[in-house]
Length: 114
Ligand SMILES: [Zn+2]
Image 1: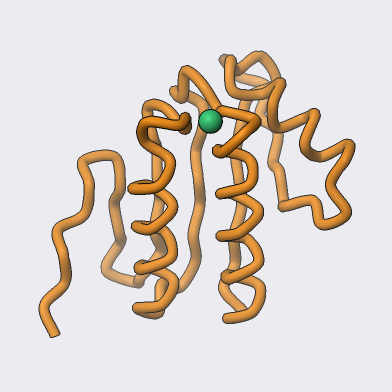
Image 2: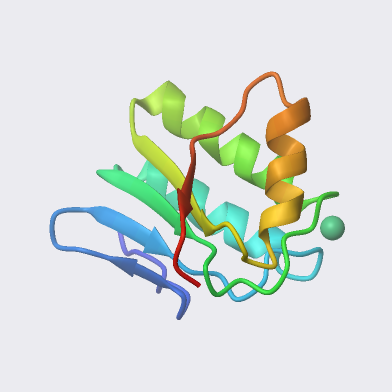
């Protein structure tokens, strides 16, 4: 089975830990990014970390549901999944809103550095 190439904002360590640093998580890009995360999980990624420190936008309409869906898949597979966002990140507001209303909040890690 050949693996599709990873997108430029995705990296996987030799141990199988995947780090994703999407520049945007919006309507234009979210499907591709979500599918990539699901493929990596299905392929047996050891863990999945979504780093939104440099993300300019997380769309509440599609980006947040995509994160929730990936989190559910990761949980079903027993794979560690975390979202990292600095408190002052532009992406942060949609995430905070989602955490407040979601019945299944995904693990959101705060970092204080810019
Ligand atoms: Zn959207």
